[in-house]
Length: 321
Image 1 (cartoon, helix red, strand yellow):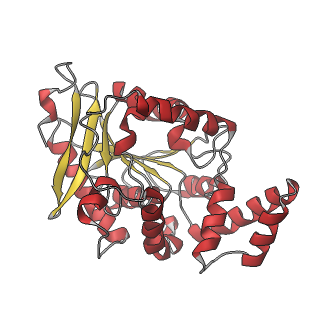
Image 2 (cartoon, rainbow, N blue to C red):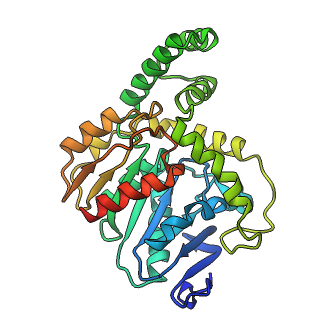
């Protein structure tokens, strides 16, 4: 990776770089973007099998405030395209790799620590990283936060079943009743739950409608994009990664992590039916950390990362508070 301090964006202090970097002995894709390298670095951790480097232009409004690190983790994006599915895929490996990526990002700037933003399954990695490596993390931000899978999954099932009944969705009601409440062994139940729980809110629908035109307008040769990678079925890869990680996610209990030396900021979608925020609020009330913020995003469900402007507004307010 070229030194981002060279400023590839035209502005002398800008950062616009992407390359495969060595992460614990394996090449993994990392893209860095920002208007000014003096801004705090922010590492985004999405869910298993999901890569955001290809969507980097969507987060351009954030680049005035942060140097964004878009990392394609193992089993995702360009890293998957180059290396294939990892043999040792699990929470421990992802947390260690995330720590190594954080060190790489910090080595290319002047900051001693970075902000970690975890979404969905990435919120588990980020929360563990904040707990175990406060020397690398200045603040943890969680959205679509998983704090106790079993309780959140049970709440999600009740919520989507109630909504399907209220909507007269006979087919979904029948399927949900056939699978019964979680835990589920059949991955088909997870797929159905995801479809129903992640039905976009109006705010999310508007954001997703703008995503395509935003990416289409981006320069095709942008450094953030890993060019020449073999094509793969993004949805199938994400599903396979989730299936591999699910047993560990299902056993996750944030209360077992203990005390934190890093501030914790939770910005869940207030209408998130996939990872209902009630459990996150309960954890936020009890968590021992230098500072804890719980600030739900109104009108937002699980796809809060894509409601970028609202999420940015709440993020900046929480960091300044």
